[in-house]
Image (cartoon, rainbow, N blue to C red; front, side, top):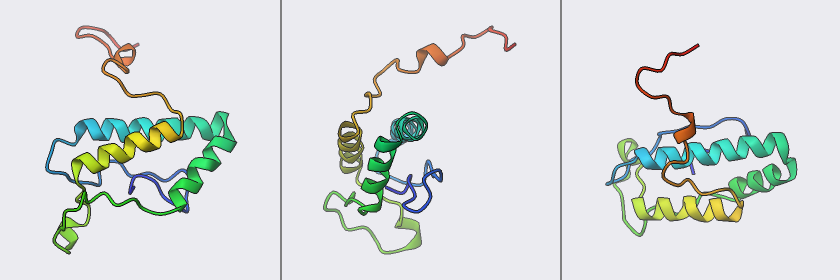
Length: 116
């Protein structure tokens, strides 16, 4: 996945992909994986190393069997269902918590709240 860099454990890209479906929830899922990996780097170095090895092992096929045009414009295209399935597979393999509706609610402020 292009979000993770095989050579640099703290270099990430978020949003460098395109699908035929809405991607904003997928960006949340990617950010969640990145956050879990960063937490592991701090709290569980062995687990972080395991994840880094998975990233170095290669890029999964996210085409879903589709053949995209070979052009710079289409370089970041992925098939939505394949992409989501790979994110879920990776999350489960690493035993990270699922990103469920309401997961970040405690971090939100309500209209009218003031920032200290």
